[in-house]
Image 1: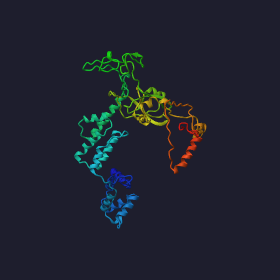
Image 2: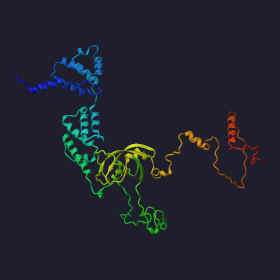
Image 3: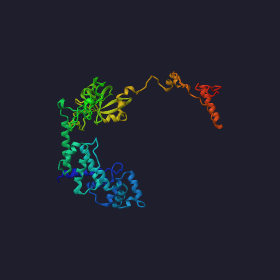
Image 4: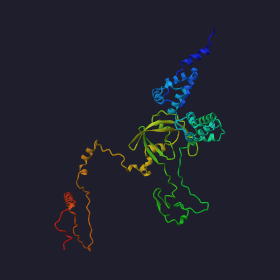
Length: 446
């Protein structure tokens, strides 16, 4: 009699299938119950007694002990299959409220490390406890997916589409994201490159719609230059006469440059609080020794909406103001070196004023006189730390008016309990040459 190969292979796979035991730290009960029902179907088990025995043997150590406790005074083998299933559900099934789960579901946002597929799978997992109706399931997934995307351009593109199926929405999002990433890597003419959120102040003579006369000396619009009282004053920065700082056309504010040591090389960054990232150009990257770059999936644009070409990112050692850390650094094409908010926060620059940042040459940021301990420092400057009155080496002169009249005040009565303490302190001041004892007071003499 011929042997059916398919039947033999199916029986072999069925016999070798192994059920994973239930461990609350690895499985949710609802998920494991689906796995157990599948195992029963594969084994073609329909008898309740055999199903009960298989269920008991499939429990881990802790769930088995729990089952023994909840079945007392009976033994688990004396209970029916449905009774054991119900007891395990009561102890291990997660209690959820659909209204709360739905609120959390629609508040889910894509994390920076999540791909579109990971984010979609995360939303699918959350729908289990939301208990959406079947006719609303796809619509709920599409709404949460589009609303939770981190990429604003992909989200706006999907909002313009009439998408009803979740799988279709996911495919459109993947395609559009790939287009954005590939488009950002296309090289452009260097003239068209824009730095991250470049803002430059330009001094222009603004003419009012009411045709008011503008003073070219100070920039004010309430008087002409002929009536300006500072029209003959010389502005010290440009050495030109007839205007103040507001009216100067030759002084352009330079960007705020901050020198920071990156991998042992001092790099001057342009402070830019409008940029979320810190980026260097290819020239600096070559100078640093071309550290290995990792590709990035994020897309960045300038203030004008142009896509920025980013070659990749790397981790670098940063030394600034006695701070040593490893920070994420992006490498661009022909951009300026921009110090963004990520490094500003990491280096605590947001806690300093602009004067502290720009003029830190006048501050003592680090004192290192070569002493290894505090005792050496105190011993070297013993004259400063001794318990005696110091001397400032300045002579003070009191100039008294000639017609001044002296006044005599009797000694203030002192409580008896304070006399000893006051006497000791007076003696201390005399010993320190702060006070000088006298027998008679010249001003008190008749």
